[in-house]
Image 1 (cartoon, rainbow, N blue to C red):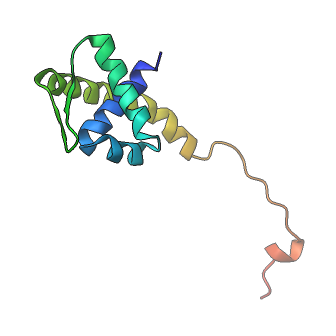
Image 2 (image 1 turned 45 degrees about the horizontal axis):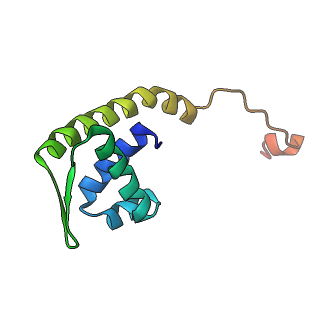
Length: 108
């Protein structure tokens, strides 16, 4: 079984991108894997999220509602992670340098 949160993320990117191929480029996975994630959600929910043809895809009525909720949930998850990610960007330890004495003295 695929990770549900990851499948929601793939679904949102697929809906935003307009095609599984474009979503696969953005996500760095095959278009078949994108399709598997979306199909996994559809099977779990027992409802179609995307209307797909060979030329285009569009959200179903339920797919629009589900998209909005998934996008909000993913934004919340990103917001929850943000403070920890910010801490990784800030230096949090001492930096010791070793250099010859002449490097620190002024030649004046």
